[in-house]
Image (cartoon, rainbow, N blue to C red):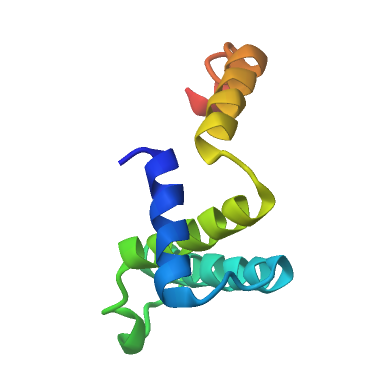
Length: 108
C-alpha cells in the first residue's frame, strides 16, 4: 500500500466508523501517548530496564501502527500529503547529509 492509499484508508475508516476526526490538539496528545507506549516497550525490551510481565505480551508492531494511524489522522486533518512530504524530506536529507554520516568517525 502506498502512503496515499493509507491516508485514504484512514479517512474512509474515520468517515464510516469514527464519526469524525478528533480535533488536532486531541490527536497531538494521542500521538504523544502512542509514542510513549512504543518507547516503553523499546526501553524495557531492548534497553536496560527490565521488562514487566504485563509488558511482555505487548506487540511492538501494533504500537507502531497506532503511532502511524494518529500521524496519518493529523496529516489528513491538516491537508498534508505524507507521501509527497516524505519524498521532499528524503531529498532534503540527501542534499544536506550525502557525506556527513559516511565521514562521521563515530559511525565507523
